[in-house]
Image 1: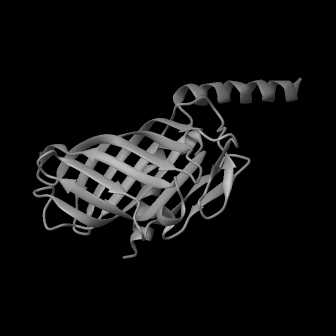
Image 2: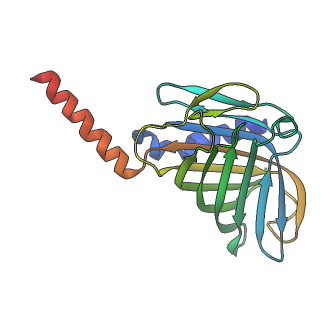
Image 3: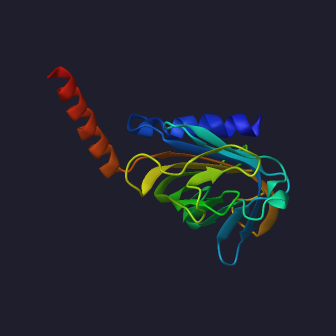
Length: 216
């Protein structure tokens, strides 16, 4: 099965419960370079020579920041990192918490916290989790999130940060479920971001007020 298709299907299933809130931003990357350090129970995935993907703003005005193969060698700043620990392992199930960050072409950072569950399956090892404290930290003066290979969007997302969302990760099975250290594994990741609970409430109030104004 195509790994991109597999992760996309898994992501769709994972975000079903969040759909009502309205997805405002998505991201997906293939062929991150994954490693696990068994003594510290730390998993990491970083952008490598074959990594490619995009970050797409779905909320108007929409846009896509593109990351093509080899972007880490062409951009001074662009990068993708995921760091997760592995704990409470029972059989082929474990828990994990950590962080992710996606850096654009001029140093702006999309980042957040991750918490969820590792699952060892016949096709690979998966991580299904929630995102929290998601923010875009702008360090450049242009107020846009820029792809190293073109495309950009305004980093002023609707609602009030921090945002929430879901995170899906997959890597090829390594012959065991975190029983020993490994490195150089291809990792696929995807995420969808929605406004936080407070933002959803405010948007709902604003929408209700708009309906009342139209009726009057």
